[in-house]
Length: 262
Image 1: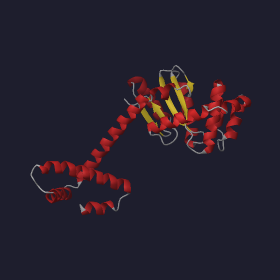
Image 2: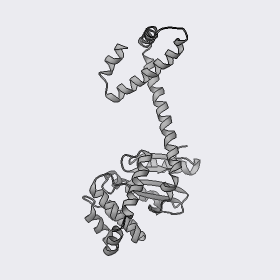
Image 3: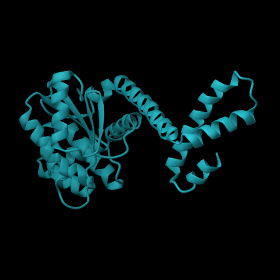
Image 4: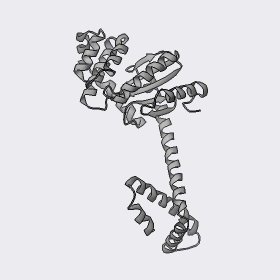
């Protein structure tokens, strides 16, 4: 096994860990096979070592099998989370809905007002709504880029609370504005959309914004989300600004197959 450890010193830590895990898998499988022959530990290790030296390609096969098992487990866990969290994911009283509130197909987007990728992805979402009259878009405030993002999300929650009919205009104005999104810029976008500053201040004095953001943080944590934008389409979690074409393909699959990937 010395050659394996020499090789591991030249590889990055994640690869090392995966190779060692794969080697452990091979050892456990082969040890179980030869144990019935009443061989001692030294004999088993020699057999395994010789076998690996003669058949190094088995390491790659074991790595592939290990990756398959991990992906299978992750997918099963994700599907379970989606099932367990369906109500808060799709029907929370604290979320914003754009497009058709009664639409039969739904995209959930987790976003941050300071996320450059979210700004670029906004045009894709507008186009999808325009082209799909049966599309329901659920927006989740997911401020992960600092205090300014949290402040902007707090104002957004207040806008949705006191003037939900003006949220769309506010959302577009703030998301597409230049510079840092924060309390000042968010309030400017809200009042510019025609929302009363006094009403906003009153709404922000409650704990609704904090509860809304905590709800989204908890949901994102369960789904394993680490950045924005992130989407949920059907039974699939989609990370990153994948673009109009991929989102369209997933919506088409959802309509035709009941899943985001046919």
